[in-house]
Length: 521
Length: 80
Image (tube, rainbow over all chains, first blue to last red; front, side):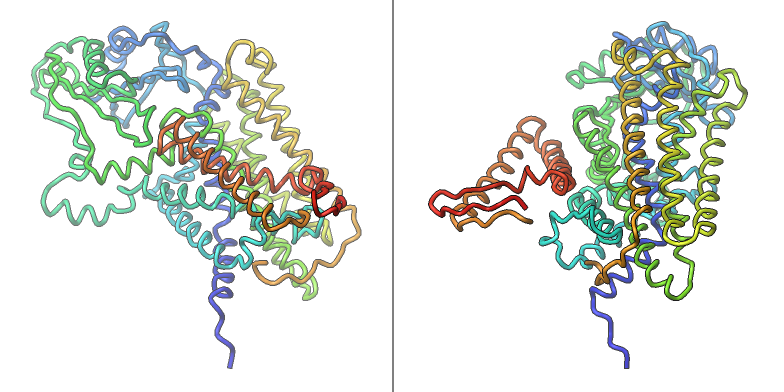
């Protein structure tokens, strides 16, 4: 009779196969999430017309109101996102017949900016992180939930599997065999940032509470006729009166709100039923100095300017908003923001090394049996990690090289991303099956690393040539978002060259039989 | 880890110094950024600094593995 597997063996099996199945999805989530930490800064890099200084004073009545009255006089909802240190533009929005439409406004010049022709970081990388751009039936959110739960399973099983978790704490042997060095890298990157991995994954699930718990909420709230959003967030509403009335000066309401808060910045102003006697103006505070992503808004009568309500979140909602603030870094802290960026990169490295480890362990076994499935997994791993980086860099280069006046420019940029990614997959599969031996596995990684280095340099050079904001000019003019992006691209190029050279050096060595390692050690 | 042998007293002193350093950095982070954000900053930098140390260890043996002469023991440990 077969012996029952021990807990450690069972967790090892779970960790291995959950990892193989979800690794590409998880790499996508973590990599795009890492880019999203600086999504507004990437917007500045990708949209040169938005590289404006922060306006000293912002006026709703002078900058936003004339544009909204011209573009959406009959809309039932206006929103105005105020500029801040990371996003120096004002964004006006309104409810149109096809949903929310928006335009960007230079608040200092009171002028609407031309359409960007690019989705930028906040329009492409950020939605990719939380929905994979799959909107049909919210499938993207559900895939994210599945991947997040898989990540939690991987973290717990990984800790159980790691037999000598404290003894191996400082173990990193890059000069040893590929399997040993990769395992050390995987262990080091996962153990030291374990609190981050848990918190970021769990908080990500809590952020989308209202999507994942929708079934239960519908059952509970449809019975009583209540509205969970209104109860938990507590915003004040009233129906339109159907009589015309002029909106009172909103700047005065904003000043009253700021006085009531004891200072602070405005995040957003929402006008409901503008031009109606029952118009409402909600002024939301920017939570730049607290972890809880709480708007703390004041609602005014739109015609008289009288304070009608002060919104307060219910305690359970405050907990949800605490996790949201923790996950999305809605507060100002540059040190923590850079650390989140670094930790996101290390998490991506953890996932990539996990895939490499799977391939390397099976290569030894399958080569003896004449099997080749590890080659396909290797190709998918290369395209799912290096290929995604390559596609991102290709998109940044396309952002600079595509003609500015091109119709459908934003769509064309995204098409470049997906085309480059598909090409990376085809390249990886071709190299895995056409190049024999161990070099067939390293070939795709090596060549894609070199391609990433070239594209990263090309992105920096093309930004300087096309916009004139090369690295030194951007630093001199205080455009730190642009300079920072250029510096990260240069660092990417250096690391990609180092990776390409190392993979080339390993390919040149005489193969040495990898030591037979116990599972998880 | 490759560190040379230490007496029990020196091991205790190094351990105490390490814990004191961790506590001082936590107090500094909390004093600077408040309890919630300060604790977060401290945890994050602890992990990242630890990782940096691990990745540097194989490439900078001089930082950790040193010639030591122990007062009173008269022994000398060579570079590994």
